[in-house]
Every structure is written in structure tokens, then in C-alpha cells.
Length: 475
Ligand SMILES: *Cc1c(COP(=O)(O)O)cnc(C)c1O
Image (cartoon, rainbow, N blue to C red; front, side):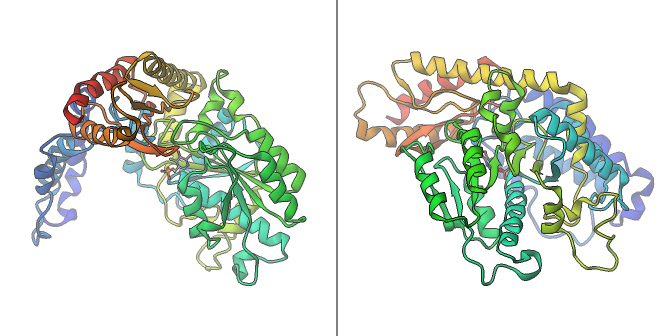
């Protein structure tokens, strides 16, 4: 029992358990709450001492499935609206299982031409989907945070090169701080990327003309002019997590062009605006960016972990991440692409497979329809909020985020933050619909983001019903 070799002839048995559990689990997602009240006690069943003698795969996976299907946060169901969390389409999930089944070492061509070729194919498909030039280089990453690290590492390479320094070899010592400019819409992961890269999270300067964080173009331009020709990096934000608002990408591309700056676009979920003629204008100018970030595990509805980085000058990815100098690794000039030379990871899974499966299964049109359905659902929710005397819409609904707060007419302004915070906690504890609060323009607000392929208008209507049901209990 305790040795995997003993299971050589029944290697698929535990997988069969997973496959048989999948149907009932997935079919139940539409009706069950986002979490089970007894989950902590259930999770206890996975705790305990490291077994000396193993229990075998079937018994162990049985337990994992029994606890997991009950105690997981059912965030791939249709009513998980907290943060910006996508689901997983049937094809993407099956593609992900295939990636696990095949267990490819997807860093090197040599270890998996399959993974390398499919990564090249999906990067091409994604560029087409987003309207990015075919000449851009790219690499799949675990997330948008890693894609921001990747794009900004390429930017750092370019920037140091402008100062006559090979940063891959020499590091940053002796260089000035890299100027990084953005609006108030910038996501925390951009700061995290800068901190990882040794550029310092607080070197980022934001230029905002209002408390919503919208960019102050003249102030940013004045700061660029004051650099007196020194190279700089502009971070443009396509889809912010509070309201779905975006920077004017084309204006920032113009600025970057005028001042010779690097333009990095963080379109973790906002990049999918490019899929619909209704929102494509928001993404205009991305095709002039030097580096672009997007996520697969958000609006593409591919399972975690899935992100993409695109860079205008493909050679910069190799310059930033290649050249390891190990004799057992291939020559960086090898024409057979080694994706671990183009991004921050070494060993990596074949994360192209679920992306391939969903793009093949539903095509450009299916993904456009999914995006438009979410635009409709978000607008529907925005409309209900706007009409309601006890709710206040705080920003126009532009993408898949609806920013609002509970505001019954008889509650004074100074009590609203506390009330909304308590309501947010009650909503998360209730679990029928999952949406928490954040701070926006100094107010405690809700910002549900419906972008799961299963979500329908009824799911967001339920959000308002549950809020109203819980509100009297927390007042
Ligand atoms: C979610 C998000 C990120 C970070 O993405 P992860 O995949 O969680 O690392 C970065 N930028 C924006 C705008 C996001 O919405």
C-alpha cells in the first residue's frame, strides 16, 4: 500500500474517482452556497500526523474528494463575485486535467515539444483575440502578477540598456531609480512586481486628477518633460478592480511616444474588452504598448494558474530571463523555443493546454459572447442599483465590475461605512452570494465582478435580495 510502485497496475483508479465526482460536483455548483458552514471541521479531517504507513491512493483520494467537494470555496460557481475571480469552462477544466495527466516539463523544447508548440499556438491565438501585433513575443505565466514581473523585467532591461548597463549581468547598482509613472488606477501587483525586481515599490509615482484615481495627463506629461530625456516607464491600467475603469490607453501611448518612454499595459481582466465591439474602444492603443499583461484565470475562465505576458521586442524576454550559463541547458539561440528562457519560471506545467482547449472549443465568437453576457449582467445589476432607493451606484458600469453601496435614506452619511462593512461580513458569512467590500474614494463599498461563464442575471438579482434580507439584522 505504502509504495507507489505497488499501484503500477491501478494507476488510473484514483483518477476514476475524481472523474466520477466531477459530474455531481459541477452540476451542483449552480444551486449550492459558496461555502459550507461546517467547512472548518471538515478540513480538520485532512490534518493530523504524517502517516508512517501510507493509506494508498484510492483511500486517500476518496478522503480528499469527500472533504474537498464539501469544504472548498465553490468559487467556480455562478455567484462568487468577490475580487475578480473567473470560473473554468468545461473545455478549460478538461484541458487542465489533460495537462496534469501528461505531466509535461514545459520549460524546455527538449522535454516537451508538445507543450512548447501548443504554447506558441495559444500565444498566437491570444494575440489575435486581443488585436496585438503578430510580431510581439510572449510567454505564459502563472498569473497577472507574474506577467507584470515579466513585462516590467523587460522594461528594466531596456531602461538599464539606455543607461549603458546590462542589468541581467550587472544588476542595478550604480543606476538611478527607474522612473515609473501611472494613474491612481494602478493595481497593487505592479508595485509588487517593482519590489521583486529591485526597483522599489514606492518609486512608482501616480498622477491622478480626482479621488477616483483617473489620470492627470498634463501632470504626467510635466513629470516626463522634467526627466529631460532620461528613459521612463509608464504603466497604463486597462480595467481596475474597484470600478472597471480604465486609463485612456491611446493617450498614454501618445505620451510614451513623445517622450520615448516604455508603455506597460496591465489588462489583467480588462484586456478582454478587446473581444467585444461594445468595449473594444477601451483597449485602443494597446497595440502600441511595449509590454502587456493579461490573465487567463479571470475573464478567459481557465483554471488557476494562468497568465500571459506579451512584449513588443521579443529579444528582451530572452535578455531578461535567459542566459543561465548552465552547460546542461540548451543554447539560448536554439530556434526551438524554450519558454523557461523567456519568463521567470524554470520548471513549469503545460499551462497552454487548458487555454488551447477553451479557445478551440468556443472560438473567438464563443468567448466574445461570454464577455458580452457579463457586460449585460453587470449593466443589469448597475441598472437595478441605480433604480433602487436604498442603493447607490458609485461609478458607471463600463466592464464587469459594479461599484455601489447600501444607502437607505434614513441612515446618516457617517454611519454608512460601518453599516456597509457589517453587511459585507454578513454577506460573506451567509455564503449564498459572495461579494465583499473595499474602500473606494474613502467609502466602504461593494464591487461585485460577475465574470463566471455560468452567471446569469438571476444570480446578480439574488445578490440584491440577500443584501436586503441581511440588512435589517446588521443595522
Ligand atoms: C487581478 C489583477 C492583477 C493580479 O493578477 P493575479 O492573477 O491575481 O496575479 C493585476 N492587475 C489587475 C488589474 C488585476 O485585476
